[in-house]
Length: 266
Length: 315
Image (cartoon, rainbow over all chains, first blue to last red; front, side, top):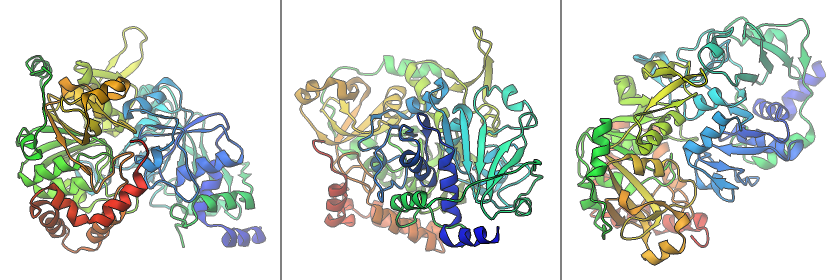
């Protein structure tokens, strides 16, 4: 275990780890809404590894963008993201593909997540008198409401993994149990949370966040220490395989300057 | 705007085909203080910057601006006083320049100045406005705190029993849109993602169209499938090359990333954020005699480089 931990520290950083572990979750032949930065890198990595028929959509209205290694668009709303796509749609129409059921995955980040997978990107403090006004949801609320399976990639920190978010910008399982379905959200839900410590899913009935697998070198105690609520720890915990040389090589070709895969903790 | 009034304005609109070419100054004089104005494009793509520039120069006040994603132009509109309220899904500097400190200053002092909708929620407001209906049902935004703070109403579908959210339509006073080409009547052809421009053009009472290039009507008729906005929606046509600068226009020029970065970094470093923006406004907005003189401030090298990076043949 000690040896693996050393290799972890030396051969890849936490952002690369999250990108690779996320990419592995994406099945071939599916459709995904990808945001700028790390989500996009994960999608393209999956395409180059095991999912060549994974189709990427951008909220800017692009179906099947043409992404060149080393030339990742800084946002998904500009021509670097749109050139040579298969189709350009209005924002309304590309987002409504999700309501129809065409979109298998959504891929989100967030400032804060709670034990039911709700995300906050609007207000720290009270919405009427906020301590901090955050930039807002963009298309995240729509993706989490309408796509079939949501992936959330985050750095695992206590201040980000909170018992209750100050504001539910983007719905996970709301108050847990069947509250999401009762609210009228009959599709979707958070599929996996991917952090630099492990993979997390949600208990099938309580909908509380649960440790599914630890990444190489990570310990259960480390997960608990960095989580601001009681994480469900099952008796049997999986372990992910370390990133391969091929995954790291492709990732670094895509983002040679580490613009989107720079370590968060170094 | 009231549903029936919004329809009546279109009924009474002069829909005859006619030459609508005018100056930027004249076109912007159609906008009044406190109007509701929908801004075309998205984040920093195909922003009708020339019109925003002229709005600020004409010292318009307290306008409610709608934009799907708001970028640095929101800072300029807030600090100049032109914007009383931003209605948007996201308001920030950009991916590498962090959260807009100007947005934070305004929205933390008075949260009502930044009205947040989900991107599809806002899009559907314009869709309903364009369809001539007062609201539209959807499955998005349900259960979130955005549903609560916007005070949205629900209904149960009488056919399927599905619980739905009703998104209210919006019919802005004016939509401002920039296209690659248009004829003098206002038939506009947009290339690249159309963003929400087609919906907003139909939802608004009036449309100000700026365009990189005015072409002959024969050219429009050669490719009618490429016409996104029909002439009868449009009230003013202004030929304005580099009309999105320093933002981008698909197939014509990329953003002036280095100039946006200068602003973004400058704002991050400045101790007096509002003062920094005021100086920027003075230099880029109030001082130049006309739009080409504004472009002069970016310089030929910047324009040539942005064109070289962004030009797609044969656009």
